[in-house]
Amino acid sequence: MGKIKAKLIDWKNRLKDRHMLSIIVVLFSIIIVLGLYTYKKQRDFRQASENSYNMAFYELVDYVQNVEVYLAKSMISNSPESGAESLTNVWREANLALSYLAQLPIESNELENTSKFLNQVSDYSYSLYRKNLKGEELSDDDMNNIKNLHEYSVELENTLNQLSADINEGRISWGELTKKGTIAFAQQVSNISKDSFSNLEETFHEYSGLIYDGAFSDHITRKEKVGLTGDNIDEAKAQEKAKELFDNNNIKEITSYGKSEGDINSYNFGITFNDDTTATVSISEKGGHVIYMDRNREVEAEIISQEEADKKAKEYLEAKGFKNMKETYYLKQSGIVTINYAYQQEDVIMYPDLIKVKVALDNGEILGIETTGYLNSHTERKLEEPKVTLEEAKKSLNSDLTIESEALAIIPTEWKTEVMCWEFEGNVDGLDFIVYVNCETGKEEDILIITNTPNGTLTH
Image (cartoon, rainbow, N blue to C red):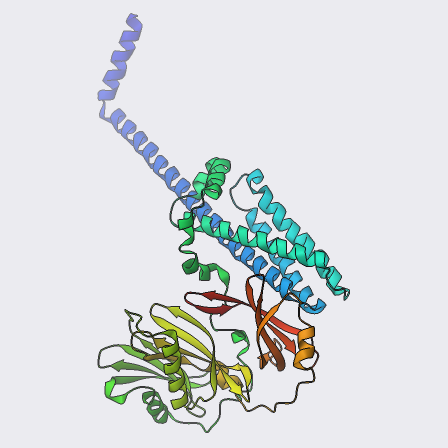
């Protein structure tokens, strides 16, 4: 006992030594630094994991949306060629959805039904694709199966959208799912509330891939700019053209940003108005055509209607020399409506000749115009009598389709050419659609699904 007491006294005396105390302080400091470093590393790792899971989840949402769209097109299609293309896309998108589903930190048994569904969609669409490839038409049972798969895909999409809202609003985290995936996932899926769908329309555009510029807007560029007419102009003349887009009395200052060379050579200007709002304008070197104009000002109230905005836009287009323009699709955001117009020649809609116009819904002021499609494609076409009559074209459609309107239209192809089609607009099983039937061959050329939302009419 005495020896132990002596050792304790000796250790106490040693601690009094400044050198020993310094060593202890250093050791404690090292332990604290190492602890902080380890904590930071763990925090960085958790953040990297969260980012990785978020990316995988939103890719999954995107691909499931694509599966739903292509299944809808498969329901509408009535030709083996068009059906085969849609089914190939279903097969591809379902496989991609599966790959991202597997990256989520959820117990595999909780994802079993979802995984099984996507596998079935993939396998079945591929088998039907092989059938179409041989030129065989799909049976009634095949079409019913596609319809059922589409209904399930809509349910899955809605569930994923709800989970997305839960994650975005912090009601659930990937960390929780990693720790207790089975319980958390089950609770989140089973506790979907009606309130959670109130924001669906607002968040829908994030994941839908809807064609903001309207149908066929991705085919508006071509090597020869047939709509770009007239002689070359200099910068001074271009500046005058820019001023003509506005009321000169409201312009305080105009600044030249010089000439830019690209797909269409242009002169670019910045304009400041008396109320200190601004606008940017681009005028083509060849012919002095407006390529785009975008005015920057806030719109705090929606006073005028969509119909009034459309009338204002048409009057503006007429005044600027763009005649016979027909409205097609529109989108409302922040008090501004963007309306897409296509040229109409002898009651035939020319979808390659596109113009976008932005209208303020507080007073009808034109806040923007973009004419790239029109300048690339606009010309007077030589319209020939369709070889396939309207009635013959109707016979090629799916018998379940309810036709609401029909017209002739010229649409662009992926090969930068144009083709005349019969355009049929209608619905099937609650889906709005447009089907294009080639006037030369009688075969389906394209199918668009229409989405009508409170903020606009969109296609995909």
